[in-house]
Structure formats: structure tokens, C-alpha cells
Image 1 (cartoon, one colour):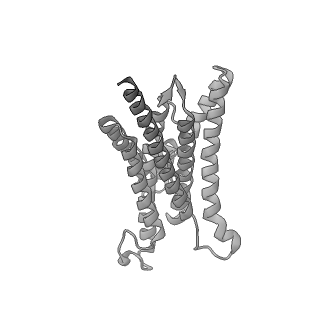
Image 2 (cartoon, helix red, strand yellow):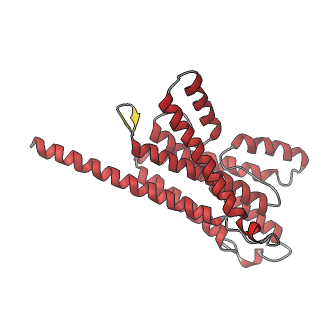
Image 3 (spheres, one colour):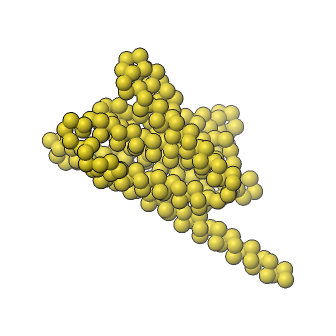
Length: 260
């Protein structure tokens, strides 16, 4: 994934796009679970935050503390599944396809009121449990995809730095400024953090735009549009990846034919 020990321009673009998607997943997961899950907000990436909230709720409200375990388990599952695919088949396209399917399932869960549950869950007596179950599904899918993005980023960069988490990136950028004094790395890390933040900001805008237009409207939301954007970016990365490897195959073919 590198050229002469350095990241190619296409790979850098892919890294920034995937970091942007990571920001969308983090913000959307917290917003959806906090608004639909009776005020219980969980994180897709920040598992230390989920652990802290789990311990807190275990002592204050044990009935709901289980929801904080869901993103932790699904994050680990995402790392295991994506990591196993990478190790066994070493195909980036399969990882992209799995990520796209997971995000599409999340979009269906959000956009269609009774998906993937039956209408019997959607009455007044069970509405709270229904919304909490939906929030649990979203937490699972967002964290699963986030775990997969960690594997994809590390595969791209060939480093142990997790570029989908702001904590890891802050450590990297501080080291590049004060210890390694690497201006190029510092620039890349800075843009990665910016991509994550922009992804979060766009998600928050779509999640709250209906309330800004009509303050009395507390039910409508366009947060699902951020998931559409995330899926679109994943498809763009997939197309760019195919195009890049197609060019590589052409170059290799010409080189081999030239030798003959």
C-alpha cells in the first residue's frame, strides 16, 4: 500500500474519506441511541467511553447498562471478521462490500419504521422497548463497521496507528510536532482529524435541521441522509480502488510484454 515507504496520493485520499465515514458513524451512533434509546447514548468508536458508562449505569440503573456492552462486542466482532477476511483472502474489495452491506442494513433499520421488526412492536405499550431495540441494532451495526474501518486503515497505512480514533491521531500528531518533527506526517494526521470532525459535524447538521426549520417538530429528522453519504463515499473508495488496480495491471502487462 506504500510507494518507497511513503503513502501514495490515492491512498491518502482513501484514508481521509474513510476517516470522514468514521466520523459519521461515531456521531450518528451517539445521536440515534441518545434520541431513540430513552436518552442512552453509546459510542461507535470510543469503547473506553462505553466501558465507563457501563460501569456507571451498572450501579445507578442496572436495567439499561447492557446496551453499553453491545457496541463493545460488535466492535471486537468487526475487527475479528474484517481481520480474518484480510488475512485469508487479502482482498480489499470484499471488505468494502461487507462495509457497504452493513451500512445499507443500518439505513433500512432507520428509514423504514418497522424494519426489521414486526408491526406488533409499534404500539403504545411497547413503543419504548421497540425504540430501545432499534437503538441497540444501530449501536451494533455502527460499532461493527467502526471495527472494520480500523482494520482497513491499518492495512492501508501499514502502521499500528488507528486513524479512525481521534485519541490515536492526537498522540500521533503531537509526536510528529514535538518529537519526530515530521512536517508531512503532521499534515496528514491533521487532515485525518479534520475529516473525522467534518463527518461528525455534517451528521449533526442533518440530525437537527428539521428542528431548526420548525422548532415545534420534535419527531422528524434527516439524520439518515448522513448514512446515505457514508454509503456513497464507501462506493467512491471502491471505484477508486478498482481504477487504481486496473492501472497497475496495465502497467505490469506492458512491462511483461515489453520483456517478451
